[in-house]
Amino acid sequence: MGLEIRPLTQADLEFAATILADAFRDGILVSHYFPVPEKRYGLLPDYMRLVIDVAFPLNHSLGLWEDGKLKSTALVLPPGNTSLSIVTILRALSSRKSLWDPGALLRYLNFSIANAKNHPKHDHWYLFIIGVTSSCQRRGLGRKIMSRIIGESEKSGHPIFLETCAPQNVPYYTSFGFEVTAELHPGIGSTPKTWCMSRSPNEKRMGG
Image 1 (spheres, rainbow, N blue to C red):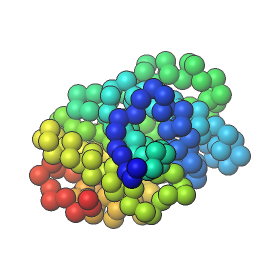
Image 2: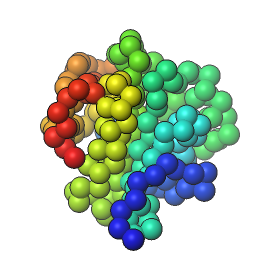
Image 3: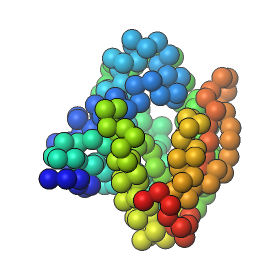
Image 4: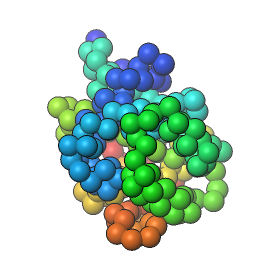
């Protein structure tokens, strides 16, 4: 059957959440939100489903299937819909009581509200999150789905914006033509260092 990239459907969402939970099991940002590993591992599927719940209605959530099995998920917010309001987040959170942790919620709001100020002011695509299941990483699957996202950006004429807290991701995204636009610690206190990156739709594609 080979590789297939297509939009996620409602039937894919639970498994897509498990893919992202596995991919970011010890990610820097989710470790900041949920610093106790045992608690984090238990909550991540619900957290990632929350993330999917706010992105999926915007109709640009993608999956990559290999031989009929979902291996990678990317949540992309389209131009004009890249700002997720606190009301939207809290509404989605209201149905996921396992995530009602005051400390985690405060850390999330502190980081997210501050970081939102660093988004471009012009229309852009926002690569909200992209992950490959851990057993399939470093096989080029992430590059395949990134190339699809870049193609949409080039077709629309709008740039792509993303943030990463992982320093090893900076050269990875640079290989696709992204440039660092800011390095900062969003919010108050010891928040993770964050690289904001943007890719013009006119950049030569290097990562495909």
